[in-house]
Length: 312
Length: 312
Image (cartoon, rainbow over all chains, first blue to last red; front, side, top):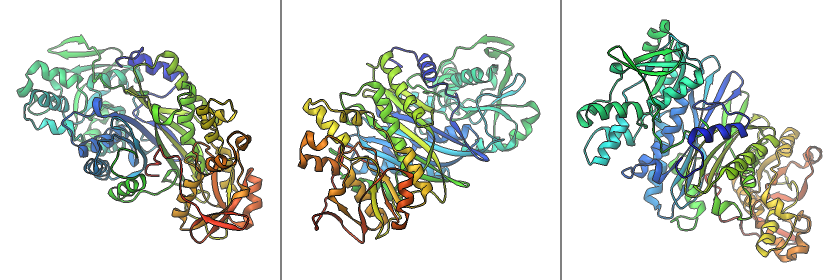
C-alpha cells in the first residue's frame, strides 16, 4: 500500500483488531438456517485495477468476475451481485452501456444477475462489486482445514494472466491477453469440489499462487511443499517469456482466478471426478518450500502487490 | 449527475433496462428459505458525501448508518456489514483507527458487526458499505403496497440534518449539526413497524421527503396529499432559518434518515404502539399535493441532488 504508513498485512491486522476480529476467508459467512450466506466485496479503480487496454465491457465483466471468484472459492452457488459505480465525467453513453452490459453478461454467464446497486459521479471510475452466494453448511470450503499429508492442487493453468500483462506491455500479440482481460472464475469447479467432500481448504489465486499459499498456510497452520516440475504453466508462456520469467509469473502474477485447494489423499479420485485439476505438491507441518530434483528451498511470498486483499 | 450525459432518472432507467430490470427498493431481496435476505450498497466519496467538518470517526459512522437505514426501511434485522475502503495517501494511523472505529461502533450500536471487506489505495477517500439483513417473508416492507386511503406517516422530525448543514455553512452553532454528522437510522422503529403488520409501504427519507414521496408514489402507483401544518419540524429549525427556509429544508434536505411509510387506517393504533410517528397526510389516487388551509398545490420533487440513489 504505497504512500500509506502501514504495510498491507500490518494494516489488515490493525483493522481486524479494531473491529474485534474479522475472519480471513474469500467471503464473509452468515448463518442462514440450513445454509451459509457467503458475501464478498471488492473495490476496483480505473488506474490501478484495469489495464489501459481494457474496454468498458471488459471492465464490467472483470468487476463481477473478481467477486464471483470469491464465491467459487467457498464452494457456493451465486445468488446475486450488487454494483456500486462512481462514474467519471467523461463516461459517455457508449461507455455506460458497455460497462453495465459487462456487469450483466458476466453475472448471467454464471447463472446469476445484478440485483441492485448505487451509481454516482466520481473523478476516477471506481467500481465496488458485492457478490452473494449460498452453500450448505457441511459443504462450505474455507482457507482453514488443510492438514499435513493432504495433497495441494490447482485448477487450470498458471501464469496466463501475468503472461497477458507482459505481452501487452511488450507490445506482443498473445492469446493470453484475453486471459488477463476476461477472466473466468471457476464457479462450476468450486461447487463440484465442495460436493465431492474431498477438499479440506480452498481459496482463489487472484493475487498469485505464492500469496495464496501463504494465506492458506497461515489460516490452516500448516506448510506446503510445491513440486516445481508439476506446476501447470499456461500454454505458450515459456515460449513467449522464457523459462525464468515464466516461473516468476506462475508463482507471483495475479489475475488467473484459478482455485488452489487441498485434498485428503483418499479423496483425490472424487476430486478428479469433480473437475480437471493438477496435484502440485503436498501439505506439510510448516514452511513453504519449492522442491525440484529432490532439492528444497524456502519460498518467499510475492504477489500482485498493487492491490490489497483488504480484510480478507 | 452533473457532467454526465444523462440525468439521474434517465441513467437509472437505462441501467435497469440493460440489466433486465432492477427492483426499485431500498434493498435488493433474495429468497433465503423462510426469510428474505435484504442487501444494499452505497458508495460515498470524501468531497461529495462528507461535510468538511466531519471527523474520520463520523465518516465511518455515516458510511455504515446510510446502509443500515436501507435495512431499516425493509423492516429487516441487520445481519452484517461489509466495508470496501479506498484510503488516500494522507490517511495516517489516527485517521485509519478513527475511521474503522466509526464503522465498528455504528454496526455495534445497531446490534451487528463488520464481517468483511476490502481495503486499497485511492486518490480520494472512497467508502462503499454493504449491509445485509433478514426479514420474514410476510413482514417485508417495500416501496410498493400503498393504497389510496392509507395514512402517510413519518418517524421523528424533519429538516434537522439540512438545518445542521445550513448552520455549519453559516458558521452558526446548533445541535442540529450533530444530526447531520452522526445520523441515527431507525432500525428499531422499522422492525417494530414491520411486526405491527399495519404498514403498506415504506422507505427512508435519506434524500429528502419530497424525493421519497415521489419514489413511493411511483412504486405504489398512487399519489399523496401532505398536510403541511402537520409536518414535524426539527426543534429549533424555524427559529434558526425562518419559516420559508425551514419549509424548504423539511421537504428537500437529505440526511435525516427517518422512515416514511403508509399505514392502513385501521392499523394506525398498532403502528403507534410500534413507535412514535406523525401522520402527515394520506394516500390518494394520483399526484403529490401539499395542502394548507384547505388549499392544495402540486409539489415538485426536489431533493438531495448531489447524490444519486443509483439503481434504487
